[in-house]
Image (tube, rainbow, N blue to C red):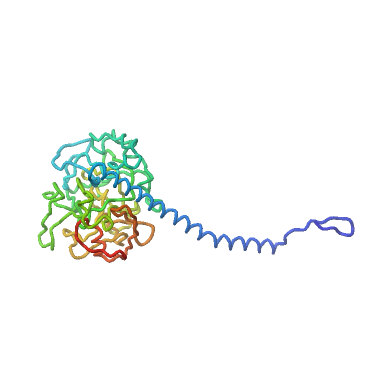
Length: 355
């Protein structure tokens, strides 16, 4: 306030130019601050993803200590035949009942005993009685950086009879809905879901492939009915990938189970094809001796977008959980055969610590 000689008081204030200067300064400060805030949020999301994997790793270790083996990627009796709740089994990969997967089996070791108790393990994983557990959203299986959905999703099926090259025939009828996972297990070099029916009864038996340089061996730590122990990982727990990210921006994945004749169609825009049921809970490194023995090794975030590769939206690579419980960042540009070596449990490869 300012006093004038005529006895009147006048109120001083900002001029228009001063206001514009202040607004400009604030705008500049905000433009400088926003990238830092966004970077901090991105870092927090990455930390949460790493913490999820570490929590899962601890649960797997405790499971192995209690059961004397890590949980399999999923379970099923390849000799079973029949129909249950609208699903006929087996499919061409001999997937049957009950189908429960690694995440569901490990729930008691993640402080999720209540969710585990909601499942009736005497019924198939897709039974209506298991809907409550199967559609429970658990944050430990969800990466904050992943887009494409965090809610439960409806499984798709194939009807062309070819588990090695399944089509996408749309949703099951009646619908089967499972909770989502942004993490999948590692099957090794070759894809168990691509095996012929004759060699799908026992994934521990090598399948000879005419013209291939080696038999089709499932040499990762996780596959259907696997019984991997610490001693089975002769390459060393610190040199073997157990789990990795798979964003639902690429395709759907779950921790619940595998349904006969289910498939994994890619999201619209990806040039890849569907894979059959086991890919809902697993990934492999390639080069698969059945499909591409000399060509394709898909490290995390391989641009082709195979639905059976690991894929993250945190950058040009992916977080992976090693067998010793550590979490490492694997770049898309990792040497292909280094990725192959890290994906096998018993290949005898020597892996440098710097990759």
